[in-house]
Length: 232
Image 1 (cartoon, rainbow, N blue to C red):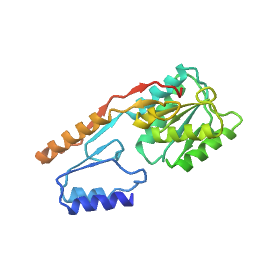
Image 2 (image 1 turned 135 degrees about the horizontal axis):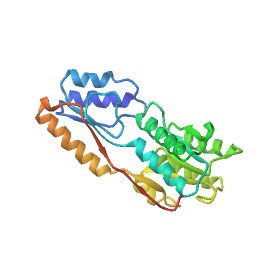
Image 3 (image 1 turned 180 degrees about the horizontal axis):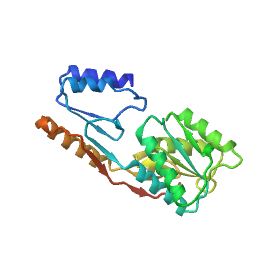
């Protein structure tokens, strides 16, 4: 968050015409964004957004996407699905957790509280979470991770522990990053339309720069799709 504040102040001092913002994983206060409003600098959120903000945003439907991902794992026959979350102050984490829980409820599947873990998104934290999963008597047979980076760290740590993927534990990520096709086994993931997100966010921000009176709160939601690979 401190880096975010510094960057925004630098952009503001550079007198930019507008800013596209994907919030840091630590951001939990928004005074630095209020400063932009005071100086009438248009800005727009994409991907990681301020839930109660009054600015436009370009996002995916995180809850629905997580619901579909969880349901995909259920249809593949997995019965003990863990959710490896990120910091719960992030709206994407809260919404994806909600989608995961809703899918399990729809299919009348129970889950244990120990199957929902929070990583700070670092390799060390993710490894600690995997170690905890492996210590459980009733451990998950599949893990839905908050993003591809966490999912790939899961795969690497599981392989280090001699766990076969997906035979013993399946892993699924979010975003369809280039690394998802390099890791072995290749990662099943939810593809976010990143290029379209950037294009739409830039187009909308340009409209708001050209027409200041046009700066009304509007949320643009893009569709995702599941990319099935070897990790499930």
